Image (cartoon, rainbow, N blue to C red; front, side, top):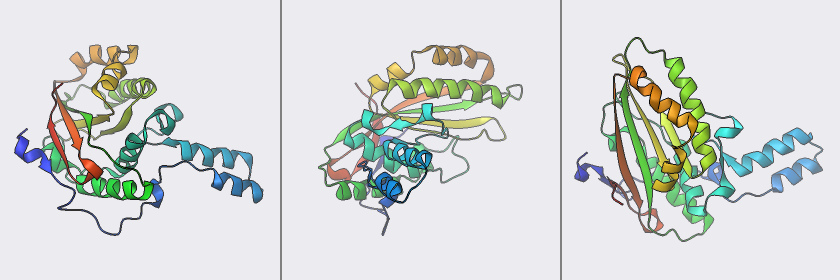
Amino acid sequence: MNLEDTRNSANHSSMQSINVENYAVTPTFAGSRACKRLGQPADRMKSLEKSLKTLVVSPYVEDKHLLYLDTVDTQCQLLARALTVMKALRADYATAPYLDTFNWAEVFAILQQLIQTSEIKWKERKFYVVIFRSQIPPTTKYSDLGTLDIAAHAEATKSGGFLKYWFGTPDHLGQNLATCIWRSKEDARLGGVGPAHREAAMSARHLYSNWNIERLALVIGEEAKNWEFQPWSD
């Protein structure tokens, strides 16, 4: 990846009039207290309280796949909130440049507004990004990959610091893209040492025709006014 191609700034293409109410980061139980006053069922109150404590950060919505917000610091919470709108902008994401694949301008415009709403001072910070490009042969059952992936994701989530996981669908050639954003490289390392990951790694030999892993640093500047992807260096 050409480093010049990975540089961008939220200032040049920030979104306008983004409503950040749905991305509020400070948990408050005023809503659940209101439910009590209105005589709402207990299970509904529990669901509301849980929604204030957790975040869906992957295609998987079961409890063991959720990010518990109190396990990460405020900057990670804000970034995870902003990344909930992350989506592919082009159909050829399996082979397209990473920077051009997703709606990064929208993500970082929301992050800027979340910072303003939360009234915190955002300090420059580096996050760890993993890009997994793969190709499966016609003999591979995609459902088999799914079973392995679900187990590995739950395992990685439990280890902590897993802020975002996105994956696509194989194209007509079996090519696909998956990507993770972690709080740190150490979090990513710990998230990949369990038995589910070992099983997935052993299965890769016969499930994939080929694969490639790229590691980048996502550097977000002061107040998130600028950001860029860089080759990872320790």
